[in-house]
Length: 401
Image (tube, rainbow, N blue to C red):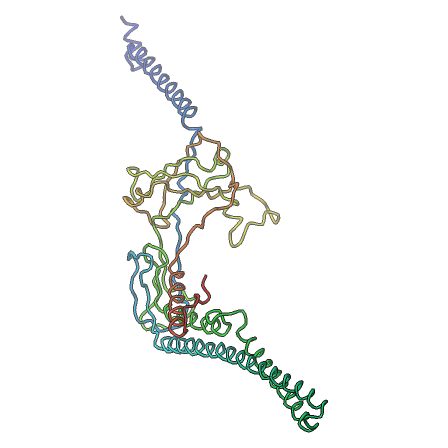
């Protein structure tokens, strides 16, 4: 009894605490072992088949809106953040001077068509004149031959025969002159109709240019998207090539994820990716795939690339941009993303059958618009109307494409 008391006094701990401590240590060891086993199982089943990074940002096309002609800004149709559809008028310029030039080009084409019609008429008249002179030459030749036979028999005088010869020579000269005039007229219209005559084509080209300048005072949205970076102001003198605003099609955004080069070993084009945006937290996830693996590091394409061959060198793990393509546009409609937003991405590495680099060239354009093609078609329709209105018979379209 005294020894137990002395033991308690010496240690200050109940004797029963030793078994409890051993139990706690065993429990802690079991938890550590189970945790380590869980980490191993997670790595074998999940971790080694996944790569992720939070160095990922939303990218997209920024379609610059520029003027193709000079003019004073009379109207601004949209401001920053506004939704615009393809073909909407974004900016309108004053076109008073261009209207005058267009009217002049219309009149010039009509006048050219009528003048070319005159060339065809002249060619037809020259052909008739040649036929008339050929008949006159045949008559003069027969008359000379008849008088020559009469002169041999003494029925007519030599003077009368000389007059007949003069008539034959005069008819020959007249036919030669008529033939030359016909050839000159024919060269101007040979192998053409009114609509394909070079003069008409040149005048039509001038009208086409004037029409395009006139209609391009209405600066259209080439794609559907949202307006950004508006810098144009009312009354400003717009010049060709100056950026007035931009249109961003947010349904066509992508993600540029910057992975460390050590993470790219098992990445392939087409692997599925889960994308989470910081703005929505972890509640919203987007489905995407790897569209391309970068062809160089970010530093290699920087304004001042690293020069590792000079001075002291310190190895730094580089990052490669990997572009991710969203596969479900409805997810972007429900939770839209803006250019430059931060995201977190996780790549599923199970399927490694895809290539590291594309093996074929793109088969379709990345972006395209037909708003300018329609302007050209309208110009062609105007040219055809003017030619048909001033030509005597139906003709083929001028410069049809």
